[in-house]
Length: 135
Image (spheres, rainbow, N blue to C red):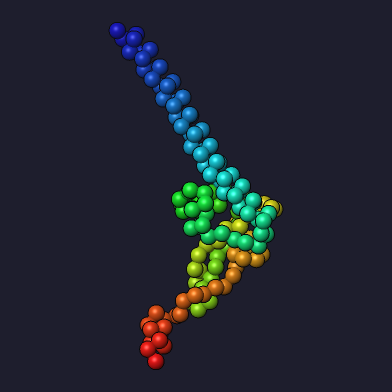
């Protein structure tokens, strides 16, 4: 009986390590798949319009990934550059934009073109627009 317990414990430890190794392979393959999906999508879009950048919301709709998955994939990639669209009035970031970059300089480099656009569609004070309409 004691011999069977030792054999069972050895088999259980071997199976545990095999399952853990398999789970880690699946986890890393899933992360890589999301990164390559994002890179492939952005690369194809860049071929059509070289200066266009895409918001996280647009990528979520087109790729079927969550916002967290898109940010994680963009951080892991050397080819995805992140930029911001600034609000013209406040100067704060209005949204994060993503763009494919051929040279693998990294995401910290400033991108040329759209990701640094300054755009605003809002007035600085929400009550101000209401006041101006009443006059």
